Image (cartoon, rainbow, N blue to C red; front, side, top):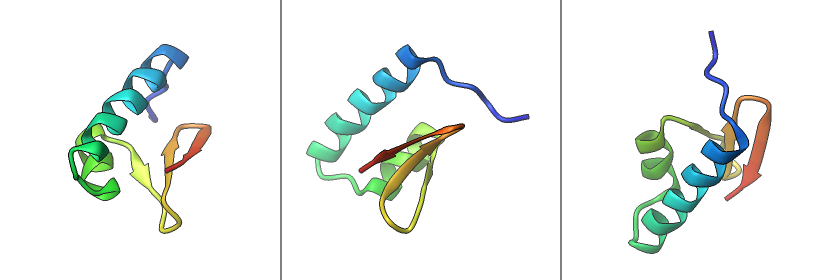
Length: 53
């Protein structure tokens, strides 16, 4: 069963990702740390929603 994220959770994860990316971590490292997927094109995938990285 896939985990469903609320809008508030997604916003929190994206804010956390922004901080970690600013600290020099790669998109792949950040995605693995947050438990979300990254496509080869740099898009971060949440169940049913995609955000450009």
